[in-house]
Length: 253
Image (cartoon, rainbow, N blue to C red; front, side, top):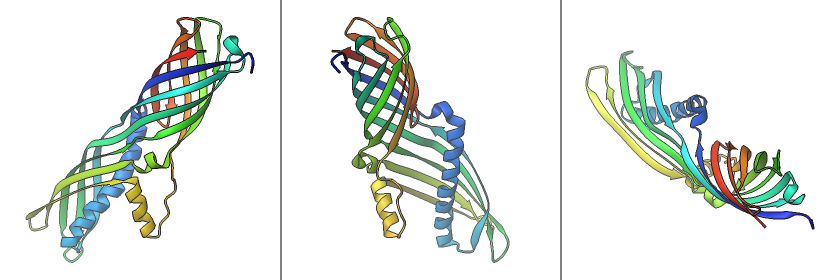
């Protein structure tokens, strides 16, 4: 401990899921298919209870941008030549999963006559969470005494309960139902809910809610550039319940 050094660092990051867009898009599309289709059917059947689903397909446009700022207090047990360090950090992150356009086609059958109806809808929405989280991580530098030093790190974090339940889900859709006789009827719906409201609704229905905070797994690879004995710049990329591209300033004392 007598030989150890402390370091303060600040960083800013770009957060996204778009790096794995095709994989995430398929997952989001599957979740939306269940949610949106059920909403379409429920609203239509209030007016036409004999109409039932006979087919459904949709096309989803997906985007997942975000950002992150944070502060870390890092300790190097081996001092200035040490390769290993431990850190405690505070992070404020904005994670957004949005679907700016969903085009849906719902085929329905009238059970009393066997005739077909069709619903064409357009929807959009997003889920936004802004977790304030606390982290512990470990880092190893490969060439700690050099001006340019590669490193990799691993860590975990948890968000506060309040910032987790303040996450917001919102959606809106409108569409036209074409009935078997050729007449049409327009439908629309929109809603905004926080995770807190969703949790309360589930508990009121006797259902459980699995989490009270957001767990975060961190894995990053980067480079440290030493500007002086005290000041360094860092740049890295990695995983943070999504993908991060980060730049930072570190001050060793």
